[in-house]
Image 1 (cartoon, one colour):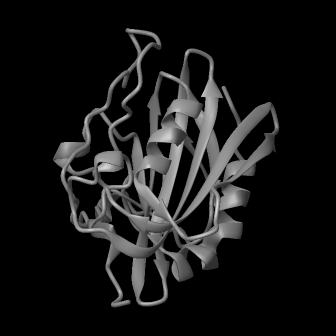
Image 2 (tube, one colour; image 1 turned 180 degrees about the vertical axis):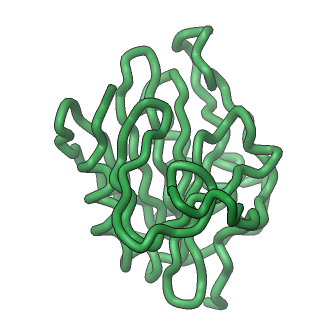
Image 3 (cartoon, rainbow, N blue to C red; image 1 turned 60 degrees about the horizontal axis):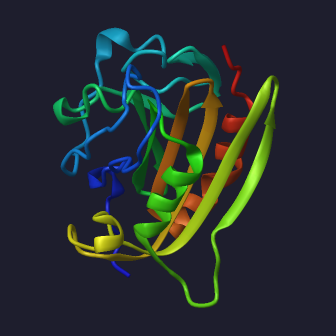
Length: 209
């Protein structure tokens, strides 16, 4: 398969779920169009807690009240205009000659419903099932889902961008009382495999408010 630059993928789809707290920040986030990589803000290069250059060592950051230890080399970048009010933070992760994108967001409605929606965006490889896991946090628990196959960003209706075979998504949901925090990493399966262990360690580092 021809290498595809996955920073043009939007890694967070519409959370098509009902219920939840009506006052939540992102009760029903809308899916923005595909994204282009945002330029780094050189004046903010000292901290991954704001858009800027990648840190040369792991760094603890606060995203919506949850503290994470971000691996060295992962660069926080500006949100695109269409992401404002939907995505809390996004990072670019260098892998081989490309970059993967990881997004963080908060929403309400339930992790199971959101995982179902993500699974609806995939035509899974023959004979495979989603890999689900629970990760123990210092003061809570995270739910993990690993999907592999052909990705169609339009969801179960398969109505938007062309399908991309050989794709892998790692999604994480962390309960936060009336809301949840979601992490979403998506890209070519061979590239995602190279940082899957780092992704798991990032999730394990989550220090809940």
